Length: 117
Image (tube, rainbow, N blue to C red; front, side):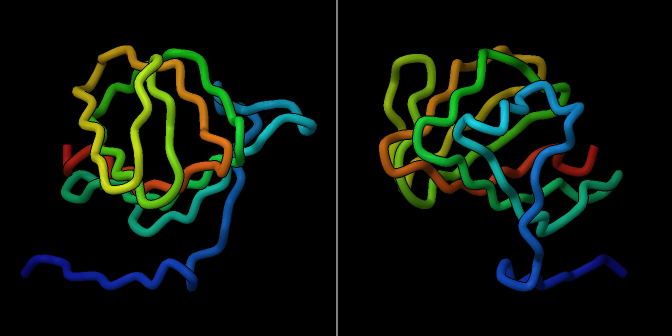
């Protein structure tokens, strides 16, 4: 039988990226935090609620998994194009994208990655 899980975002603690994360910024720079709603496994995607503080910047990069970013609040500059709330960004694995910069009010989005392998 398959897994069905319900997660309430407010019940999942906010986390900060590990110091080893390539996008980690200095303490005095706009930060990132996230809530893990589902840890990715062989059969399940990784699902996170992510917040970038206003002005947070990440250099162009890629991941070895396909990602979907769904913008919930605020806006995100993606390589010079503004992506607003209600929009989805689909990024095929091993595709370089960015740079990313959070808008004046920051940005909150869902990140779904991996899709069960």
